[in-house]
Image 1 (cartoon, rainbow, N blue to C red):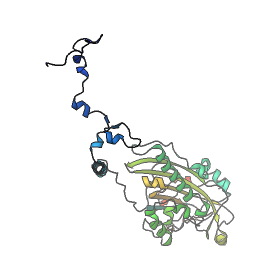
Image 2: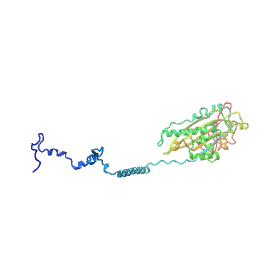
Image 3: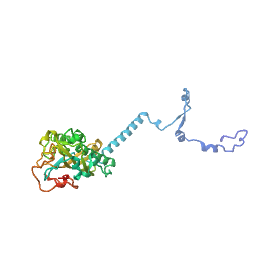
Image 4: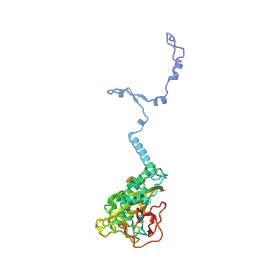
Amino acid sequence: MDGPGDPPEGTPEGVPAGGDDEYRSVVFDESFVRAARLQELSASERMGDHALAVRNRHLWSRVSTSRQVIVLVILIALAFGTAVYMGLRHPYKDPVVPAAEPMRATLVPLAPHDPVPGGSAQELFDHSPSAQFRLGAEGVNLPAARSTQHFSESQVMAALAAAKEYTVKSALDPAVLTGGAQRSVRLLLDPAQLDQFDRSFDRPADDGRHAATGWLVRFDPAQVALVDTPVRTRGVFSITESGPATLEVSSDHTFVYALRPAKEAADRSVNADKSSLFTVRRAMKFRFDREGLQEHHLIVVQSYVQAGPESCSADDEVYLRPLLAGQQPDGSVPGDTDPYATGSATAAVCGSLAASAQPAPPGR
């Protein structure tokens, strides 16, 4: 026979001759069957309970489980190694933070030309250059905080706030002024300066590094008592960025204290019943790094103090030594120094207290 013939009854109605050619386009070759996602199970596989008629054919099913685990471990190791390498080799270097340097202190006593004026504290204040000063901490005002190149506005504000707190506690706290505990000031210092601070009180010295009065204002309670009236205060703060890792705050404040002789020293005072004024001009420089800003710690870089009326021979490493009402210095110095003047303060061994810096009550 040459080939399949037509059925005896002929070709079914509606089916064109040569029908085999019509279905040839839907015949699947072997490569198509192998790539199918579904594969029919064999007869023996379908005999199992709840067996599906077909199974999925995934790419991963062609790879053994152990090989999958090995590949996954290798990928994780490569990712971890890349992260470590990039962390060690990143091009950005942290800015170098300068080491905390010792505080440098300069103390300049201001000797009066004449005996120190005395009277009631209010009368003296009203007739002195401090008449328009603010009371106590009200005179310690902060400027507006603005961001710098490497520090945000909040960081600048934190530096200014810490400098103000140090200024108030070290020059206005009555417990500190009367030679009492200095712990409140100590807590604000960078830990690197604590040894120098402690030595300044345990073993003070006139070496520009270890004077207690370089850190704070204090009077000998056996000789001087504070009059119960607010300290007059005026001053300014300024802030600069000294490097990508540090901020510096400079302060320049003048404090005017009303004093009288202590009870223990009253019998040796010329005018024990009168008050007198004592003026301290204090220029400070504080430094902050980023860690210090977070911990609320500062570094005192420099302390420059003019104080009077005092004798030029005053031993003021431990306490400031005011001349009280009616007293006069044991020597005089040519030229005048005005602690109320503004502008940069210049260092000197001793100065002459300008007459204009003294109160001039009526009748004097």
